Length: 240
Ligand SMILES: Nc1ncnc2c1ncn2[C@@H]1O[C@H](COP(=O)(O)OP(=O)(O)O)[C@@H](O)[C@H]1O
Ligand SMILES: [Mg+2]
Image 1: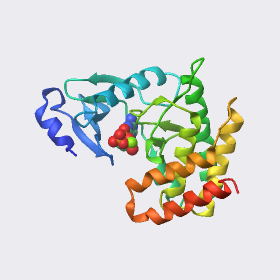
Image 2 (image 1 turned 120 degrees about the horizontal axis):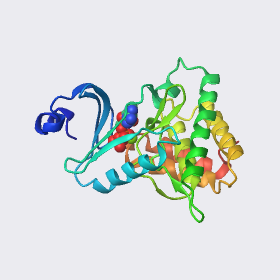
Image 3 (image 1 turned 30 degrees about the vertical axis):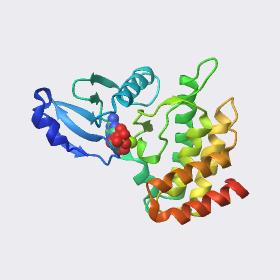
Image 4 (image 1 turned 180 degrees about the vertical axis):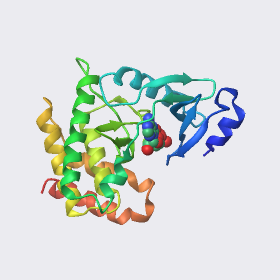
């Protein structure tokens, strides 16, 4: 993965960007910068990810006025860069898994998160199909005064249950993994979402199990734990 300094050094229009913070990212290079005196997020897509950049840009354009999503200011196709506003807050993965965060606060967050998904799915739904955000993991949310979603490059037509199950698998499998508190948080999240929408979530257990197994490719060191829990959830269900 490239370093943001390289973009700033080599591309004239970003020359005076001052890096404030670099973010953990799977494949792209993302940083919070001050550019021409304004706070901005620069998301520099890896080569070959033009389609993902287009998807993210058009999803932000459609969603950001009504939903808690960043505003995208510019798609710079020459350099594979998206410019958006900086959401000040804490990454949801860090908040939820911090031992100092009390259970009642995490429960409150689950209700907020369910509301975010209900609004996203309702807003992007068309007469005959649903659109989902894709890549539904804790790292792609920021907690500020409310919950904000980021990273929409995998947005696509799909079933809402894929997003909801993706979130549950992220909640369960981030450290501390599979605690009884995590199962309860999933329960609150699912029930709260189901109460706010007019459609059903089908095959939830199967979808969560599948999403857990998919994580093995990134985390081979915990393969056995992921397999065991996927198996149990498939057999006995998530909402025991
Ligand atoms: N608009 C934003 N405001 C604040 N932080 C952001 C914003 N966009 C991304 N981030 C942070 O940068 C990280 C990586 O960005 P992301 O779009 O998720 O890239 P990737 O596709 O590589 O996962 C996110 O997990 C989040 O912590
Ligand atoms: Mg991401």
